[in-house]
Length: 299
Image (cartoon, rainbow, N blue to C red; front, side, top):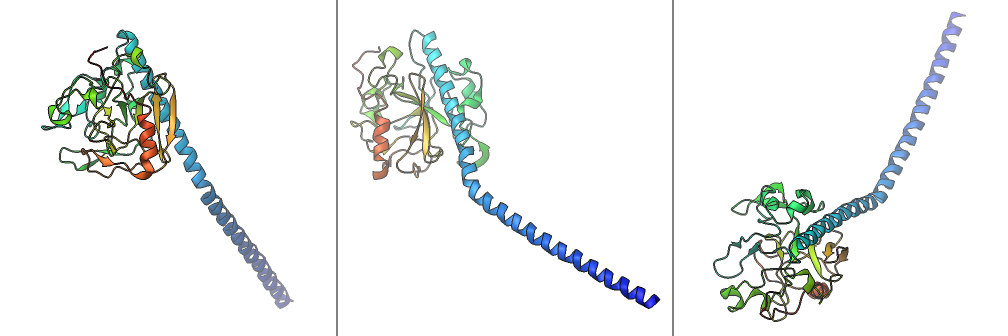
């Protein structure tokens, strides 16, 4: 009797173990199926999530440019229509260095370790937030005095078009044959002058390529310049092969480029040739800038 009971208990235990192991095996298979399904869904959704994330950053970038443009408009309102000087520029001619006249924004975006130069700019009093000068998608970093990369993010990602008070009467004999800058890089000095192109088509701020961004002016070589057909400064490529711009009437636009905008010249050098794929966008930018040079008057 005892033996029979022990046998029965032993059989029962084996039965239970079989059920438990069977159940465990089935649950493990289910878990693997669920994990595999999640992995597949994640792989499918990740590009969409990354794109949505970038769209959010681009919207933030556009907001920054609109706020800067509002500051630019308020400066003109406070100064009888005179546009904020756009004068902190890198000399191209012999001697090099920077013209350090008081400008809408001061400093060298490639080497500035703090926002102090931004804070001394003429537009900063209208919005005391250094954060609006930096694109959230810009992960480029600064360099030290010897050009060695540092881990710190730049403090600025944007530049102002040479077309808006871009040091037009400055003469650099070694660069412009003794003529004022405006002869080959025309600009408006007053808001009332902005007629061709009109305010709706004249861009003020642009999300600039980290490969060319240093001074505070986005330069463009006009057709009567020896640099025509080359990039003096290049637009940003970081927003899904596109960049943001703001215009003199206050609105902003996203422009997607026909070909990638990748600066390949060493930092600080200008004159990278425009590729065939970039030419349509090169001309599009020209059409959003002033083309007519000065006539000898300051107004």
